Image 1 (cartoon, rainbow, N blue to C red):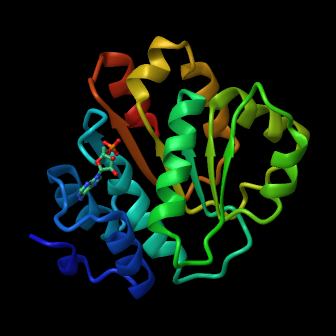
Image 2: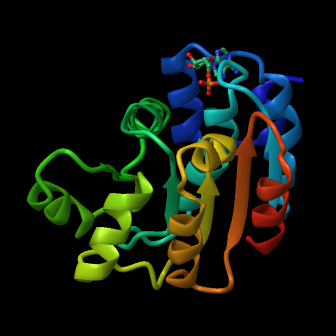
Image 3: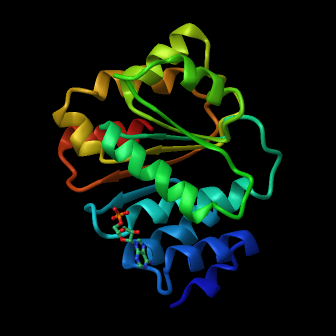
Length: 195
Ligand code: AMP
């Protein structure tokens, strides 16, 4: 299989070339067609398998075809390092698109994030700071179409599951969801079912 099979938007084909990706990894080959069909996806994948592009590519492909200027995709990650990595992957793969991504996490000033949130199409967020923005009404999630919870098992280890449930209460009910986790303990299975 190669990336041509997916018929990505030309701007993404350019992004793939910039990233130097030629062949989809197994998680990409299996997840992307399901996401295209509009299905919810649960990916059991470790870091290093190409799982980031498995959700970033179909999200970008969906967003380039619509109206930009509102938050249409939300990716929740357990650490700021991971949030930055995902944001960078979006910047690289989406470099030929007009899609705007912002990484939102604690430990840094909130005001620059508030400014960027006004124009973002994709938000990559750690749970605590995201809830802070929700509480201040500095993020509008009413137009959300896609939700990704990445490294769900690490969220569990870090005690973030109550925060994730609080976030879910603030999202539109009709949305596509993807959950990625390296392991599948019962708590994550239960959360995934609820999502
Ligand atoms: P991840 O598991 O998402 O952290 O990705 C691990 C590494 O694989 C990152 O450096 C990606 O840039 C790279 N990568 C992801 N997908 C591909 C691909 N299809 N071909 C080559 N490298 C890839």
